[in-house]
Image 1 (cartoon, rainbow, N blue to C red):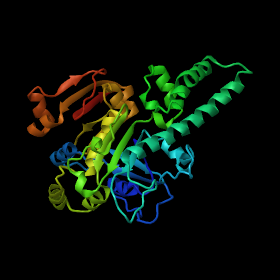
Image 2 (image 1 turned 120 degrees about the horizontal axis):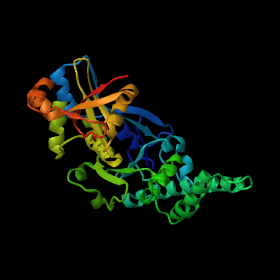
Image 3 (image 1 turned 90 degrees about the vertical axis):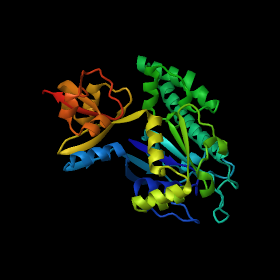
Image 4 (image 1 turned 45 degrees about the vertical axis):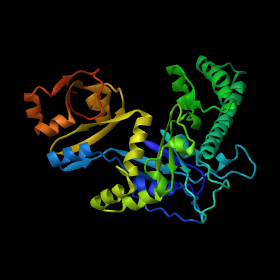
Amino acid sequence: MEIGILGLPKAGKTTLFNTLTASRRETGKFSASAETHVAVATVPDDRLARLRDLYEPRRYVPATVQYVDVPGLRRREGGRGEGAESLDLTRLRTAAALMHVVRAFEDPEIPHSEGTVDPARDVATIDLELILADHDLVERRLARLEQATKRGLTPDEQRERKLLDETVRPALEAERPLRTLELDPDDERRLRGFQLLSAKPMLIVIDSGEAEVAGASPESFGIAPGEGVRAIVVSAPIEEEISRLEPAEQREFLADLGLAEPSLDRVIRASYELLGLISFFTVGEDEVRAWTVRRGTPARAAAGAVHSDIERGFIRAEVVRWDDLLRLGSLPACREQALLRLEGKDYQVADGDVVHFRFNV
């Protein structure tokens, strides 16, 4: 899974990127990076860590998320729709979701690129730039389809033109993000193929000051999440400092701030919820590992996340809840207590399932 991080300059994007990925990319008050940064974050999961302690495996493989931090959007003086030219659109288009880091902190030493701190305005600014970038792409695609009418459009091209001309373009011209559209599965699949930015799920991360981070809500900053959008409040500089502490010191620091967990946990959990993702586990003396699939994934398809041969030769899945396994200490003990279930190919794997796949190829 890849998530693209974007926002206006000096909003705290790279500081948050460093926290999430344990990176040390340079940040400064008086300059903004012009480079795209890519790194992987390990998904913190206490359930998996406890299973590791139970099995003491040779390999321990948590789930991961790849984050792409693109340079801050710079708008030309008075130019609507020209700011997206400063974005690394190629990297953002391939991301499964976008993370917009929004500045909500005051710092007289760091002027805001728009003159004043206004989180709701900045969310609207980024949304508009993405919409206008999408509009440009859609217009170019429709122009190519118009030229292709001379040779005759295929049925697939005709459906594509109808979708873009009658549904997508009107929404963009009304400055409506495409993530809010209700489409049938076939049109939704077609739209995904264009990798349009405003169609991607959006996680808004509000970078606040230390005093506001505990107990603050997105609504208190004038941001009300809508369709396909989640929002959380963090303080990126504080969280980066916390990430460098030992676990015991982290807990003490978080308690002093009135926080239950570090931002890494909250950001990744919000990302999973936004994309409808869950984790299931495979365990053994060789390896304890987390696997990421979409909620509602059937057992046979989930087996494909482990290996295509397992999906192809799927026979059944042996399933137990992670907490039952920890409580009883072994799969045989769970079987004796009738807690180890046999499930077929259509069983929908649940978050926290420990699964052993039986297969034959």
